[in-house]
Length: 310
Ligand SMILES: *[C@@H]1O[C@H](CO)[C@@H](O)[C@H](O)[C@H]1NC(C)=O
Image (tube, rainbow, N blue to C red; front, top):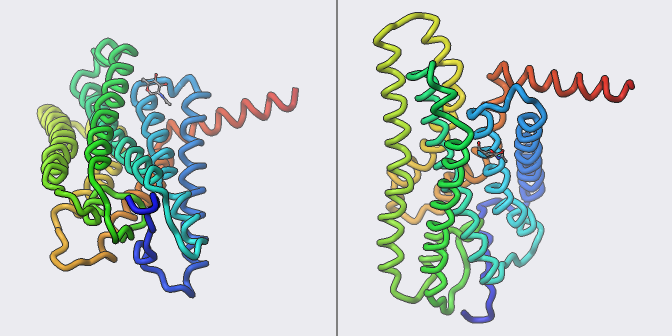
């Protein structure tokens, strides 16, 4: 590792110099919206006892994960946009990669947990509270953390083995595993194999579990089709399904349409989609369409007002 720093190339964010300020303002507002939106969800769920149900506790975990996920890349990206000669220390780069993987996977595991929760709620409505006990909920969250910590650690340790030679310019806007592998002058076969296998497991298994949950939900709805049960299923699963489509849509789009030519712009745009846009949209998807969340907002603010008028 030459001088111990990685230069983050300007090609990482293909922006014309005259549009730099515009993009800076855009990303800053996206980041602030993400932080405030997700914080609002966490605080609302914490404050309103009506929302202390498994579904909302998982949602609060998802918001926490979104908040951290965008804080891994956005502040550094914003700082680099102001910097003439953007760079990141080697250790900082590995740390960013570790947390990027950690919160990215956590998101994927939490989406599975939430799908399982909806499956139990719709297919076994009478046993819902006994099955989704606080103990099971906590275990599912802890399991997600353990798996994702292990996975992120594995990739980071494998990356730390590699040596980097002359060209240490990252053609990306953050320290992404694949962008770093392209720079290494060691043999990266083991890394690529592990990425292929673990990436498959971490993305495909959760995706299949979610599809299975929804298949069960649909088949249970079709057994006794009634307008009321279908409406109820839509209202409780709609938000989750939108978030899942957004998350897996971008990730699958990225991996199923491999770039034959070295199209950095397209890669960057897709990576932007899931690192910047998805964490911002999740709170809106959940709160705008959701009567419980709006009710909670009303209740929390009313309570504050009476508190102040005392
Ligand atoms: C995450 O979920 C667990 C289990 O449901 C819950 O106890 C915890 O409060 C949640 N954490 C956050 C930050 O919402």
